[in-house]
Length: 176
Image 1 (tube, rainbow, N blue to C red):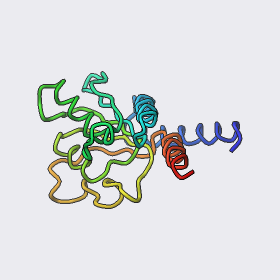
Image 2 (image 1 turned 30 degrees about the vertical axis):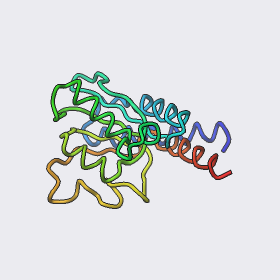
Image 3 (image 1 turned 60 degrees about the horizontal axis):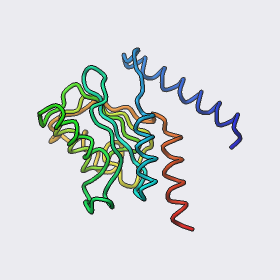
C-alpha cells in the first residue's frame, strides 16, 4: 500500500472512530494506544508475541505499561493485560481498579477478559480483533455471560491497522 493511501486510510479510520466515540458520549476521548503499541514493539524485540497494554487511573495518569512476557517468564499467564493489571493493582493498593482504563493492542483472550472483569476495570480499548483466540467480541465473549461480575465499556478498532501490522510482521518473520 502506498504511503499516501495508507495515510488516507488511517485518517478515515481515525475520523470514523472519533465520530463513533462522540456518539457514545466520549467527546474528550484521548487515546493512549500509542503507549500500548510501543510496549508491543518492545515485546516483539524480546521475541514475544507483540501485544502491549497500558492502564490509566481515574486522573488519566499511566499507572502500568507492559508487553507480553510469556516466554521470558516461562509463564503462560504473563499476557500484557494480566501483567498490567497486576502492576496497576499494586500501585492502587487494591485488587479492584474502578474508573481505570485499559488500552491493549489485541482483543483480550478469555483469561484476560475474566481478569479485567474481576479487577472491575471501567473501560477497555483494544486495537486488532482476534477471531481465533479473542474473548471479548469473539470466542468465549466473557462480558456477555450472565456470570460476568462486571462488564466494562468496550471500544474496539483503536489503531487497528498498526496493531494488525505488528502482528502480521512478527508471524511472517517466523514463517520464513
